[in-house]
Image (cartoon, rainbow, N blue to C red; front, side, top):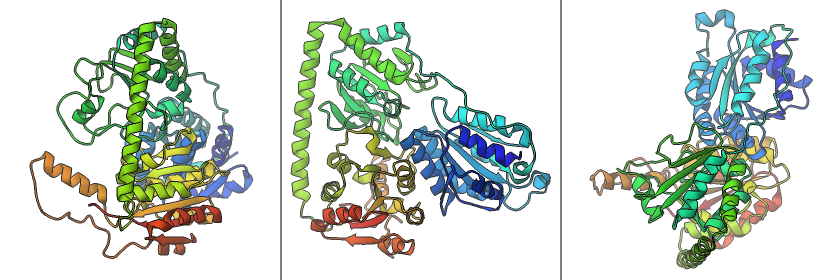
Length: 554
């Protein structure tokens, strides 16, 4: 057999059903072999970054390992940003790129480079297959490393001549591994003692809660402790039901603001995340003075990485969270249970007050022109089917999005990790491939959309059921907010205009761009027409685009 056959059979052995790629000459062996492996579908993209973004979101939405195939050095370079996003999102991903013939690599042929070195900084493991005899072992290890907690991307370079070499070493089936162990009983007991002693506990739910299916356990733990539950500032999954009375919001992006958000909390329990991702430096700790700290992770590396802990616990996330919840219940302390009930009641009252404040704010913004952000989000929600998968990259509309879309189903939401923009349109492709029986709503700002606008062609080519809603404010609004913050923080107050942050001259025509790539679209400037336009787009089936002319920075 040839190296290319071992490669393809390795994919099949590890449960791969889709390859997301941008074809090129050095990928000829793989592309030519697809006809002999009909179980492997190929999703065609016009840019390598879009292919990786789609594969990453597919992996996160489906629970399968995503596979992306790129084209030599420039193609890998195009995709580095999306590989970084997959690393931050902990998406199990195998990224490959065709490499030039090894017999002439020292002569530095066109498009060649040290691909493994290029990918190494944003990969868990990066290598090149140098002979067909090692193809089976390399691919076996690649899938293992990608799926070892914390999950993430690996990179494999595939020289064209190695893919054509003969070998007797067939593809290996994956190992049967039981990695999600039980947490230490001593650690659980120590954590429960701290929880039972806390009068004002808070919980921060990271993405690993959703990935590990630990949400039911977290709901039980939150209710038994009466703790408020916060999300990381940037989160890729829904790790706690947004409509739950104890659900709060996302954390801010500097240590002082996080500390203020926690207020007088005397214990912070962190579950499955980096804790904490900051944008701006502020001195001091993100924890209130004297607050005890507990962190639970599925692997030891993140424990105590940035902050000292009172208890660090490693184990399967669901098993660990349930162990804590059961430990609280088994304590059977009537005084603690009464205090937890009081905390639950206070949080429910606070949640109701915030909902009323949101309705008042929505009312004030209802008639503004151009369309206000609160009105736009409420109308989009009205026009979206209840079972839609939401791929969200709204950035400056995120507060209004969260208020309008209080989702409870963890399979209904995918967000971008890492802070790099442009993931939304690409990610919607992967979500649609992972959920072919469900509609997908992609929410993106206009600036973000331009980073991966080629995704529209792929959606049309494969007839994916996605409604792309583009929030067109004709500016990089987040940069304007950040420039305001910079000027304030660095005592550089200025009345100067915002430099190079407007996108209105010439105006971006998303309906026209979509039409050129085979996606019908409509532009809406009347707020009364938004919900109907979104509903009509979903009813039409296939890919559709709705461009909303919304207000800019006020």
